[in-house]
Amino acid sequence: MDIAIRGYFEFLFPLLLVTWAIFGIARFTKALDFIGKIGKPVVIAFSVIITLYPFTGLSLAEYLLSLNPNYSIGSILFFFIIVWKEFGRKPLLSYKNLLQFSIWNVGISLCLFASYLGFVDFDLYALGYGFSFWFVVTALLTIILTLLRNPLSFIFILYIISFDLKLLYSNNFFDYITDGMLFLISLGIVVFAVVKFIILKYRKSHA
Image (cartoon, rainbow, N blue to C red; front, side, top):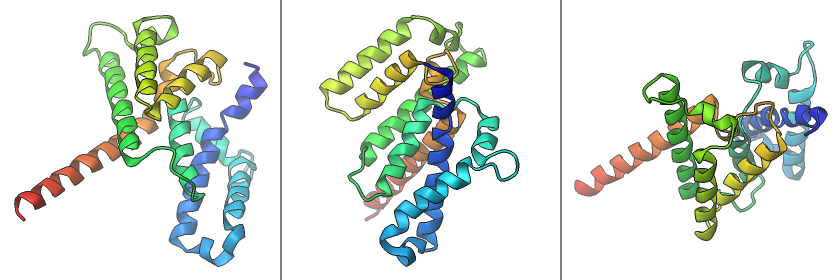
């Protein structure tokens, strides 16, 4: 992958993050209702300017990338999915699928953390640099999800395609799957789902 193309691709995550945040602010302040039909295009244009224009020598995107220069494909897809909903289109993932995606992110992230902290005997992260059983596992999961017609299969396919094209600066496959931010967001979704389930269970038992 050409370095210039890769350089542009890295700005996709900051743009999606800022777009999501501005949509949230516009919805909270009811600004979208005020400006009518042109509201969503205005939000997109404003997001591009806020994200990419170097107001203080560096753009907001560059500040965000300084915190983490290699946001995962998983993070990019997550924010693409939630920004997509802002356009009133059919959700790319149902709540159930989003929860499954979050559980996957939490699971693989915890495995990597456990390996990094020495709780397991081998370095799982190192397996992402070359062909290993992990690539076989990912391929099998992709096939199974495809056969089940689960939309998460497209995410797994995009992991593989993006890694093959080297869209990120990292040469490690795990960096394409998850990162710290995605782990925290996914953990929040999973915890919320568990708490919601417990509350509903409690209410049913005391109804």
